[in-house]
Image (cartoon, rainbow, N blue to C red; front, side, top):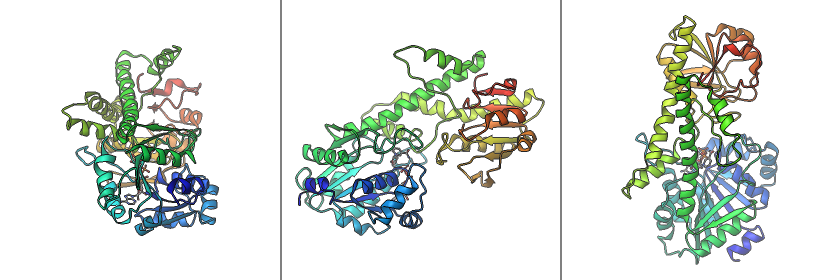
Amino acid sequence: MDIREKIQNRSAKIGVVGLGYVGLPLAVLQAKTGFHVFGVDEVAAKVEMVNQAKNYILDVDDAELRLVVDQKRLEATTDFSVLQQCDIILICVPTPLTRNKEPDISAIVKVLGHLANYAHPDMLVVLESTTYPGTTEEVILPALTAKGLTPGKDLFVAFSPERVDPGNANFKTHNTFKLVGGVTEGCQEVSKLFYEQSIVKVFPLSSPRVAEMAKVFENVFRSVNIALVNELTMLCERMNINVYEVIDAAATKNFGFMAFYPGPGVGGHCIPLDPYYLAWKSKEYDVHTRFIELAGEINENMPYFVATKLQRVLNQMGKCLKGSTILVLGVTYKADIEDPRESPATKVMELLHKEGADLQYVDPYTPSLVIAGQQYTSQKITPELLRQSACALILTAHSAFDYDLIVEHAPVVFDTRNGTRQVTQHRERIVLLST
Ligand SMILES: NC(=O)c1ccc[n+]([C@@H]2O[C@H](COP(=O)([O-])OP(=O)(O)OC[C@H]3O[C@@H](n4cnc5c(N)ncnc54)[C@H](O)[C@@H]3O)[C@@H](O)[C@H]2O)c1
């Protein structure tokens, strides 16, 4: 049976490689769509959890995971040889940076090492991990065609970036529009057909490099705009202007403006990393992507800005940072999710620790964390805990926080996210990034 038929009658077997924030929701979606899915991960503990239907990703619905596992539509394994039985492979492994901010695609290369053995005629392989333009054609394709398979004829290869926004209540994997760039017309046709079975709208593109570039451009766009508003915030701080009021005012324009908000820095597995993939690749073409570097510089400076401003806030109260109890509220990289990766809160806390602050934190999504080699445990937020601190420092504005309680009991609240915007009482105790 031809792969197109197998896709349409759901008999195609799917291998999702990497069961993380991207891979697990995708594996569950494909299993729900009716395909048989093998989830492959090198971490045995994750594989065991999936097979026991123990959910570890907030965006995955517990009941849906339980259903597809019970129905044996989703099976997880550390054994890459299952890929041999698969008709479709979706690669969702991490693409971090090296210490020198260069792309580290070693996880992709490792997967290709396995796939080179298991690739067979009529197989579709799609890379979903974010990477620099050119990866699919320069790295994926040679590894898969080494044994004589021909793209577009008996092998189908494409790049289809995952754009999911963890924690977004409205947009999940199935209704986040999908880009697909096939290596040939045939690859594009088959990959589009596949994604159309489960995703509401699929946009075919002329090549994988367009799709790869579009994905990094989306994240560069966010990084640059966040940097712009962070820079404006530092200026507003000097000029004693409330930056949030400025943003709200600009947003009244009924065209041509899109609001971005300042914060203590950027985090997660995308915004702080992906732009550097493009910056690195661009050097091969003698182009220096100055916007990317500048945005990175401004965003990376924000934790320092927060730490310095906190010292000023305490100073005005006749206190110094050294020895003061700072109660950090929220440590994940954004609100209402459990992902602590690259969180600017970690950097801010490291800086405060270095200056001798006595740190405590509250985060309903992060039971414990290690800062500068020291283990911290999330506290229960109480009036006493707030009163005992010199300052409550909001780094991530989770909606679970009771902001009225925080402002009522903390001596001062340094709110780097404007989470206290609805609080009406004791506003004189609130310090924002810009005021
Ligand atoms: N998290 C996001 O919000 C998001 C959004 C869009 C795109 N992306 C991109 O998707 C990709 C995956 O990101 P993620 O957030 O899901 O990462 P993750 O770290 O949550 O998950 C990756 C999984 O891959 C596994 N893994 C690592 N190396 C492996 C290997 N060689 N073989 C098999 N499994 C391996 C890990 O154990 C982990 O379970 C990245 O390229 C990322 O940039 C992430």
